[in-house]
Image (cartoon, rainbow, N blue to C red):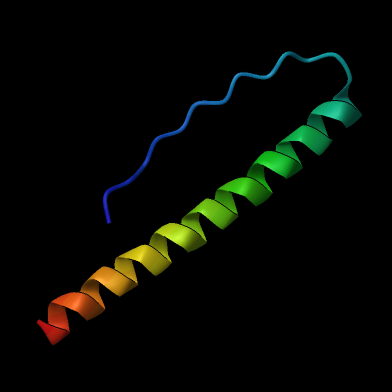
Amino acid sequence: MDKLNIKVNIEIENSTEVKEELTQINDLLIEVKKRLESINQKELNLKVFK
């Protein structure tokens, strides 16, 4: 799978707030990765059955 580069700009106001935002961003990226892997697997399965 091709690598996806994502840049995130965060305005730092409060370190606790930034940590929470980074955790949320990380969770979202993990979910995106899982969905992309699932799509990739489905495409592979389709190629096998064609």
